[in-house]
Amino acid sequence: MNIKDYESNNSNFDMLNEMYKELSDNKGVAELIVETDGLKLKEFSKDLKDDKRIVMTAVKQNGLALEFASKKLQDDYEIVEEAVKQNGSALRYASKELKADRDIVLSAVKQNGYALKYTTSELRDDYWVLNKAVKSDGLALSFVNEKLRDANKLVEHAVRENGLALYYASERLRDDIDTVIAAVEQNGLAIQYASNRLKEDESCVKTALKEDGFALLYLSDKMKANKDIVMTALKSNGLVIKHIDPKLKKDKEIVDTAITNDGLAIKYVEDVFKKNKEYALKSVIQNKEALKYVDKKFQKDLDFIFEVAKYNPDVLNSLDMNSYHTVVQKLNEYNNKEKDNKKHR
Image (cartoon, rainbow, N blue to C red; front, side, top):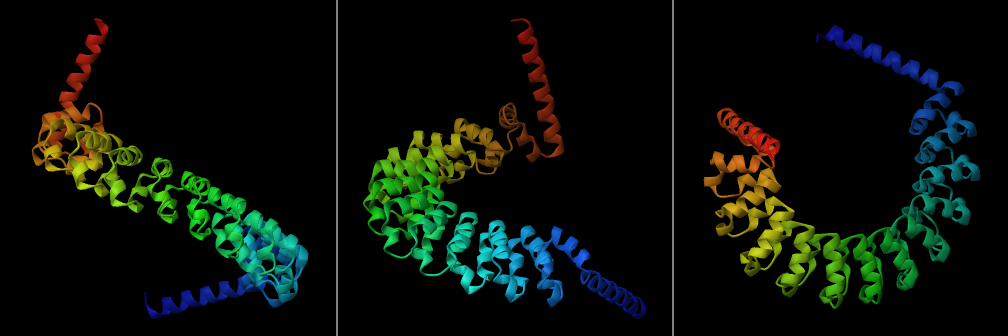
């Protein structure tokens, strides 16, 4: 591009920009613009940012457009109410007076519990407001005062919405089995915030592992060496085998459970299993990517690939062209033979 072209393009851009500004200063056009993108309010003139109809249209489309409204309209009950109904976090841009209005705040936290952050300390002590907030976003418990973080029902509602909210619960409730089970049912990883006593409780631990096998990472070495506990984790996620007690990695039942859940678990087992055709087959049939981790003799064995391809034809994608055609031909012969056998049964 030469200098004249560059200057011409810039001139065209400036002209279009001026046209856009002129058009957006027209109330009718401005309203059409914010109907599809409320945040365009940012680019309007002060007069338009103070126009109730235009601002109302903007916040109905995107509540966060309240940030660009005039101070007067940030203090307008109807405008703010519509904004927080669309996006509770718009409460952040409301006037100080409306941030303290209970009904406005209730609307905000019902839509987005995190909006609790932007209200007054008085309303953060209001149980009804808090209850609405944590039911919408359990992590809103982080904005609750210490005393109410010890309220059974409030915390229960929080952890049922997001198990990780257990982090903000009182020490007493992190040692309460009902609260912790409610948390780990929603997110198994919440076990990391449970008391040490409950991290050793089998019912609690198994509930967590059934929801997310990787909850095992937050348990004691004793638990990682407990076969029953480890089996529960592996049935949820076979890759957890990487983190179990080394002695259990030699256990056939453990390895079988892991690769049945996820063939890639073969990557983390003893070499004796990688060299075993039965385990190698099972892992690659479950996940074609496991072919990278079985013994090298299987990776180049077309008879082995054929056995896998009968159940998982995706493994063929890892072959070169000649090998691909060889195995596909063998598969076609096998399938035709199977069809003939069915006809004669």
